[in-house]
Length: 319
Image (cartoon, rainbow, N blue to C red; front, side, top):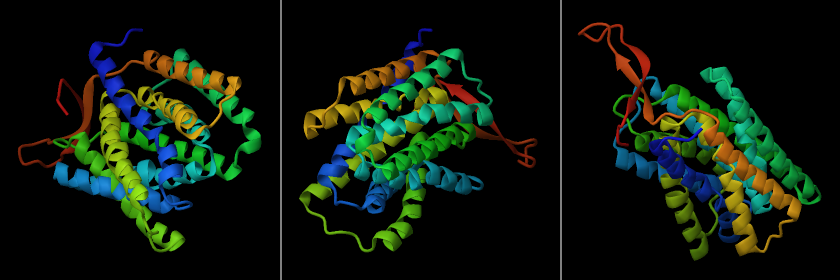
């Protein structure tokens, strides 16, 4: 099935997010202080969240305080520390590849929470993606740290749940993806902060390389990338968005090979190719929408009493 031009553009813009995230592993291991996954997650999330809050100039209202906290915990607060823990304990490409099983989690959660039955193509793409992951992981099993593997899997599960709930809840009327992203990053950063100081103690001393690494992670790798990601969730299906995830391990593997001298065997390269093929199939196997799903409040009367939240889709809205 050929995608409409508007949907294809949305897919391409959303894909920039996992491509950027694929550089996280090299930046973490080469520029940042060692063994500080919580502090690194905090420095990535909170500055970016506060920046987007200042730009969006909108705060949550009513039930959205709780929803923003839940989404911030899943997409940021749990995801970031687990992601960086896996990055510290696994080779760059391997950490990303293990986490690329996210499409399988999202397919199942979308069926449970969104009522979206997966197509045969989507299921096959998920199986192929998992097989590609297994080729890479099993080939390198002797060098993999089990804690790192579990952390990568847990991070994928956390963000998969956050992606599906973001799609399910939409966003409030008059709130764009910029503000929604700021809410989640700020909430996630605030959740990480006390844990980081309790577990890791005072912040480490930072040299110029570390400052540059954190600036890159907070701005390009987080503020911009997550805005594109949540914008895509509003316009595409949750399955389409998550099937872009394998672009992260592909990018990480290329960066690891080109910049860090990490070798890739023919079997591992085959696994990467299968993961990329699953990404393409995941886009073409489900129907997308070019509209923006939002939570809109409609009142039963002119006084506003009895208002109930409903979901609406507006096409052509600029965000």
